[in-house]
Length: 342
Image (cartoon, rainbow, N blue to C red; front, side):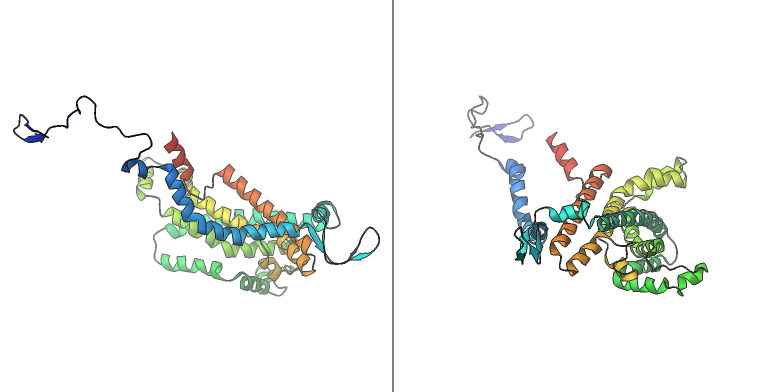
């Protein structure tokens, strides 16, 4: 290697022989440099799969296996029956889709459709009311005033109370001589089988779970910079314009995740109507309650069929909610991946 001197007087190393003629060894196509190994998408995916494999294994055991076992149970029936020759057959028998046929169009069709519409009605009404009240609570808790910390802590109380205890509390309130009738000064049988019992369940459910949406929306509100609102006020935007043009779009990810979680919870509702109103009440009977009733009567195949239908219903609602409203609960990973490919 030779040393040359630049015009400024500094010493520089001369390039190796053959460098000017392009004779330096080139990297083969199969070899990877340090920068290539770090950006290898195949290696990153393999490492991600290795890191996630324990979690996926646990989910397969605690989620996948019960779902498959439940579907398998729904294809069988237990008990005594007569075969084609008139002999008594005991034990477990394969009946195929007979349990599902009985649910949709057989002797249990009326109970199923009643529970299905009750579940859907409770989901729509409670989630809409909880969203409106939860957003209002978040907007109030976001403001700076004396006692804000006490208000935020007190909001957690209804949500922290166990559902069974909450049902007993509201059952005492909705008694014929209870506090609610004393306030409205009218005698209503809230815990009887009828439409008032639906209203009682909705009121109790909204009271208990509205703080959940309020707290998640509050977390989203705290991520919005104050400069955005100051700029909007300088441009002449009023409170309503700021809410619909700034607050609601920026808090949408947190709000949609909260609404999705609440929908999944209400679709599985069991304990609140069972404690507040009681079981075997047609006005508040849900899919979970009717499945529980079938299993208590040792009709495990029918109970598993109800549970499988509820699972499919919840999965369908979740898929449509994510696709139509854009509730991406895993963040912006897909958008980042698309930009990287482009």
